[in-house]
Length: 82
Image (cartoon, rainbow, N blue to C red):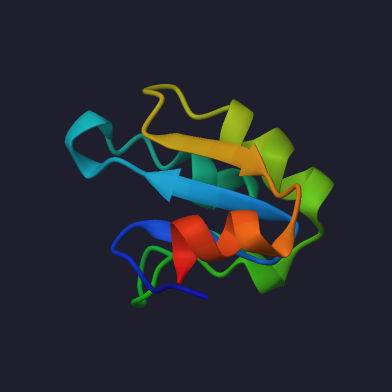
């Protein structure tokens, strides 16, 4: 789900993307292509894998362009995503 540019959530985690920090190493797409798709828009689809796999892949981002926050409550998601 995408509502604000570069902010995505599956209800369990919020993933943000800062394009100005990205070095385009494609580590995200190579490591979890079910979620990080370089050929479609929106290019992040958090329904493609479970939350633990998503978090593990985001942690491997070499530039720090991808970040995550665990969702604590539905209101937390609404503050960032809706």
